[in-house]
Image (cartoon, rainbow, N blue to C red; front, side, top):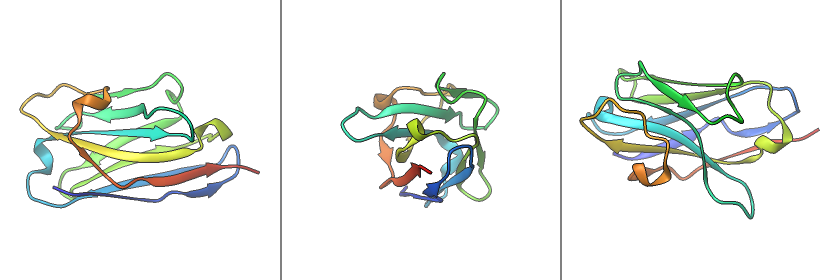
Length: 125
């Protein structure tokens, strides 16, 4: 399975963006999925995650109430809707996946084995 992110760009503070992560292959529904981000000079950090079936999700405190993760297993795609964006949300956003039999949500970097190439999100006036 390969992961390809899209939807990043430049947005003003308070604006919105929707990131997409398209997965190749036919077993997408067996993958837990997550979004992480990395700002310059900082470590990669957890943003949001969703379990295989899409019924369970988790968010970093910094994005809770502003970001929403979802998935469409029929389209092999996971999304990250980002609202009320702030300059501190500026980072490269990475989609991550892991083949699993568990319905648990994964929030750690080491819980994922597949990574996309990243998409830049810049929040600036």
